[in-house]
Amino acid sequence: MALYAIADTHLSQSSGKPMTVFGPRWSDWTQKLCRNWTDKVRESDTVVIAGDISWAMTADEALEDLKLLDRLPGTKIIGKGNHDYWWGTVKKTEDFMRKNGICTIKLLYNNSIPAENAVICGCRGWYTDKKTAPENADYGKIMAREAARLERSLKHAEENYPELDKKVFFHFPPVFGDFVGEEFVDILLRYGIDRIFFGHIHGKYDIPPETEYKGIRMKIISSDYLEFSPLRIDGVNS
Image (cartoon, rainbow, N blue to C red; front, top):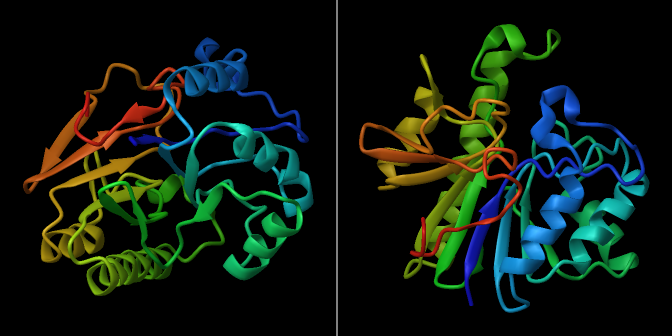
């Protein structure tokens, strides 16, 4: 059994949305992802996908994307990204998946989920630049809400799986360039987290795969950065 991670699958089986606007590396990205995933991941493994699962706007539109993920080997733990408009409440989304026979996908949202010898925690986070955030969004309010979700997830892990190593995932990086999400950093330090994984960042292939802030190591797992190949994170090549 092994634990893998990736972010930003941006599946578009129904929407047909292209991704080459982000560069030529995105050419035929779904085929690359499926091929690399199948080559690496076994049915007994788990893959964490840190947000931006599908371009769909509704659950019905996302169905083909969810079915594609369901067919791939392993258990999938998915978090929410800024483009996951199809994602409803946890109950509605879980009911929808169950109704449609999707049984290998679990939702990471205000909770924690045991996987292999770890417990998966995390939240979406929010934009690292206020200028790129949606104009009608209350930046401070959303940052506070996401920080609360992170703490809720970590607390859930401590209360339910105290013996397991916490692996923490964000969609948006909590620290990137000159941006520091102090709300997130304070919580991570308080819970003794020294390693996190994040996605969202595209097209910046010259940045280091891992950075550090206040002793917290932060690893990028955006799918294009990983060349659409899930990264093993349970001690092998991590």
